[in-house]
Every structure is written in C-alpha cells, then in structure tokens.
Length: 370
Image 1 (cartoon, rainbow, N blue to C red):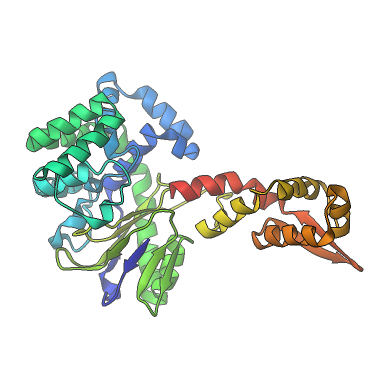
Image 2 (cartoon, rainbow, N blue to C red):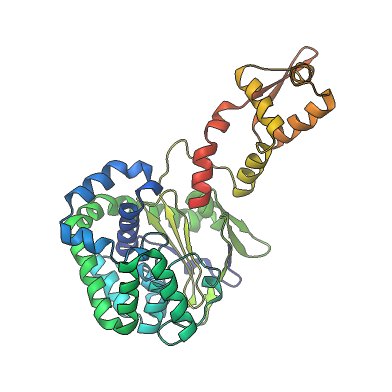
C-alpha cells in the first residue's frame, strides 16, 4: 500500500482523533470479536447489556463495520472545507456524514468487501446498473437482512441515512458515550505527541511512532504501508485538496486501515497500543518464515532444535541425509530468523528461537488483519 506525498507540505499532515471512526471500530469489535481477543471482556459485557432492539439493529447493516470498515465513518476525508479534520464530537462527525451527497454515501456504504475495484473507483451503485448489481450480490452473500438493507438504501437513501444516524446516536447513548469519555484523552494526547514529533523530528520519525508497518521513501516521496492488500493513493487531490490525516484508535489493534479511495483524502487509521507479544515482523518476513516451515524435513529439524542445540553433523546423522543438505535447510531457517547459531570451540551449534516461533500465530493473525 503506497501513499504518494509528492508536493505535500508537512503542515498539511494532521493527527486527530475521530469519535465516529472510533464508534465504527467499536461496532466492528462487537460484530467480529475474534479479531480483537484483547477486548473479549468488553465485547462480551457490552453485547450482553444491549437492549434487544439495538442488538438486532447492530446486525442489520453489519457489513458497514464487520468484514470491512466503511469510509462513511471518515466523512471529513471527502469534504474539502474540513482541512482533513474530524469533528470534535460525535454529533459534529455525524453532521459531516450528513453532508456527503447520496451518490458518494451509497458508494461508500456498499463497498462491502475488500475488492480490487476500491482503489480504481467507478460509478456509484445509485446511478450505475452494473455497480448496483455487484453491490446487491455482495450484500446477499452477507445474508438476507443485509441484502434487504442494501435494497432499501438504493431505493430510498435519505430514509436509510436517517435510520443509520439514529442508530449511531442510540449506540452513543447505550455504550459508546462511556467508551469515548474513557479513551478520548488518550487519543488526543497521542495525536498531539505525534504532531510534535512531526514538527521537531520530521515525517520519518513520526511514521515510526505510528507503526513499524509504515516507512518513508524520501527520494520517491511516498509512504509505504506494509499490508497484504495493494493500493495507491495521492495526498495531493484536486477534489479535496492536499493533505494526509492520521486518526488514532484505542480499540483498533490489530487493524491498520488506510482509506485510499479515489476522490477522498487519504487517511491512516492506526491503533495507539498493541500487546507486548505483538510481532513487528514485516509481511515479507512472515511469508518467508511460513515458507521455511513448509518443507517437512525442516519441520523435523525444528523438532530437534526445539529441544536442544545440535551440530550440522548430528542433524545429518539423525535424519539420514548429508551434511550439505542439512546446511541448506539450516540456512533457510536462519535467513527466516527462526534459529540461533553459536560457536562452542570448534563446534557450531544451532537451536530454534522459541520466542520467535511462539509468536508465529499472532504474527500471522496480525499480518492478515492489518
């Protein structure tokens, strides 16, 4: 994922929390609790306390916050006069959402899956028959209630938009108001800190503060986001002006979301905290480690190295293969960072790096959900 920042002044890069974006994250955690094991206590207690009517409505349009995050939760990014700043309150954010025109709103709401068409743009399902058919097909795959919601949205956008605003307001009254009171100070402090790093140390340092998955290519003037998905965005956009916004989230880990739809200001929605055991391995390194373990002989070698240190000769004798063959397998495991090597006299000993291997599952989950 790349964001072109050619010609972008640093003063057009802003850090700001968004109540509506955090509400979208909260709704996502409630509908996809498996993505957020660290929030298990909160999601369980919150779902149990929801009134039946609100719990029912939560799932009526859950494709807006379940499998993907709808861009309607970041409406400021489509409005040129906001200068890339969300509202200070949920009501202000909802007012910004109300300002989106129907075509843009419906297109963003019905971007139901992480489709390759997202970064290419295209006509709104509200006015294009092909886009409408595709949106309805995706909604039907989510279930009959979601399909019915999509049909209502296409038939009567104002009524459904009013329904959705009321739903957000009811969620605020039921549980999100308390959540926002708890996290807003932390998010505002995080945004201020990263803005100070940007001002005093530069963009590269600010990006490293946001996430190890972000990097800056000074020569090419682009930001690379280490994700399994592909996409491109430009921070100098005639439709909404030049700018890039970073929105912190208290509930977001492991997701690092990038709004890169054409015609919108790019937004990076990032988690402010993550578990201590969260791996910092790049997607490329994660793939390399999984490929290293895909060979049955290397798995058997790992079984030995998990128990104690072995020399190359001992592993060759153990598995009935030649020392050069063992060396080739060890080189692949070592390049992937899965084993440690030390010398003891004239012997070279190899051993599995247990903490690294223990994190493979969480690394994989974070990588695919990022």
